[in-house]
Length: 396
Image 1 (spheres, helix red, strand yellow):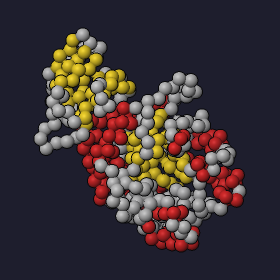
Image 2: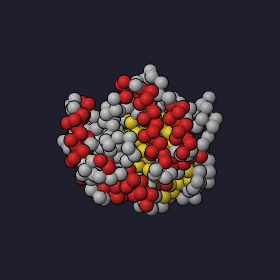
Image 3: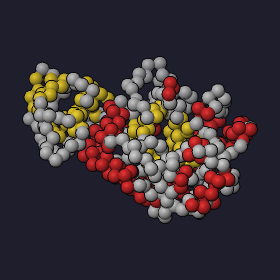
Image 4: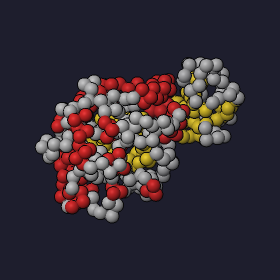
């Protein structure tokens, strides 16, 4: 089985931010609104005059991601409406430099990521509602697609990877993946190649050999066996706070913060990454509720960062799905994840000599007994006025 170090490195990132940002943000009704509302292209293009992006949008976006504990950001360089946040270098004028923004927004995004030690990833649609070649001359369209991707691979320095979406629009057609992925390998040999084939019945299936990560769109990853697999691949679940991926001004159907945290922990339990989405407003800034959610998640990740970053495997399932023990090869310790502890004793099988048991959120050292390969200690109750949903005991 082929094992690539850059794939293992991606797996260690653990938590990333997904960003859906484009002309649809002006309308505030989600990223599919042009298609869903049958908006004529001429009418939709009027949004370009209203696409006035704040000068500090990228800096604020990266800051919010970093505060939440994200190590990478995947941004929609071009979504299905065909509008590009990057300079298409004369391929068309349907891009950010020709809008009211008046500049290459991906350049600003990458620069801010690099300053903050955040890895930039590029989402790029495979389908296009703007370019007529998609329907009239598919082979010519694929050349246009590859030329677009070449710009992203050559003008912004080293990137973490490319994230494709839209194969499902023509599932029986030849997307010429060899040529597309070969282009990426030529310019960005260690970039993750991700294609969102993980939807519906295809969830968790690999596809082309060059794909480096399985995808789970709003679906939880399951443990994976690599028996008979030709290469080692990572896994990534993408999730949204509310209803749509793009900004929705009147979205009142947000999931609880606790559910987002549980998604993150479930992903790491299965060695998958969580890619958690935000949809910036037309000015590029995040709405208050998105910023608030990220701030809340950051409270937990700052206290437990090693437990979601350096995990290697689940070594012991305790009595329920809400408790499990993971091992960290780098730090030579275990992490016991406990949901809503109530002060009862817990016993886990550990064959290594235990020196200490410490609660990661407050640093408390716990008394324990180790005998016959089993460790027993008391699950400390939540202190009054605190609820972190999950607590983690570090066992050294």
